[in-house]
Length: 230
Picture (tube, rainbow, N blue to C red):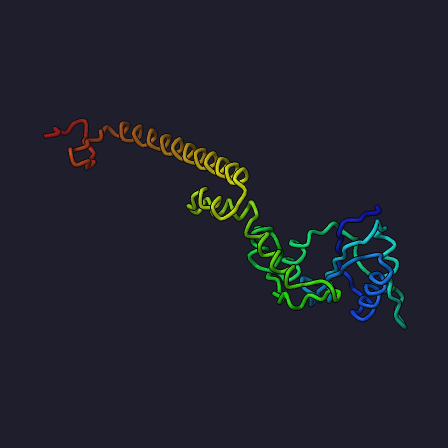
């Protein structure tokens, strides 16, 4: 399906071939920017390149895939890339370098195994694209994510503190309300569970012909029905 939005893929091309294609697309005004990073193979995958492009006009991703078919001497199948997917700059950047706080926040441990970390300086881009600014934007987006704000509120931060830091007041209030509702429900459920256990304990004590005595200092002791409390 044709698109003009940023898209990304995983390429198995040689870097020299890929770079040549990207520069050709840039010169032809097919794309206005590109970023990529080389990754060593993990979890059974081969070495590969994470690639992101920003189209300059509506493009057909399948046409790009065809142009990335790299034929090699003595090989039956050409090198190429996977299916293209929509791509936000911040998410792509943080995943590309395997930024651990981002992976923990985004996938909650759902990613298989430990990912090799990379420096943001390993990201390659066209000459006019500022990868350092991209990295700064990516870190800022993580700090301002709703998940991160929810974590801060659960850790005891006051909603007003977040608002004074520049967070959207409506977003903060919505998260705070949801957090309060969730905490109240958890406390309510814990109370009910403890009350049920309390009732069962009293029933067991009563069945054993004992009662519970509480002195003025709130010390508890069991009294047999046949025992004189004094």
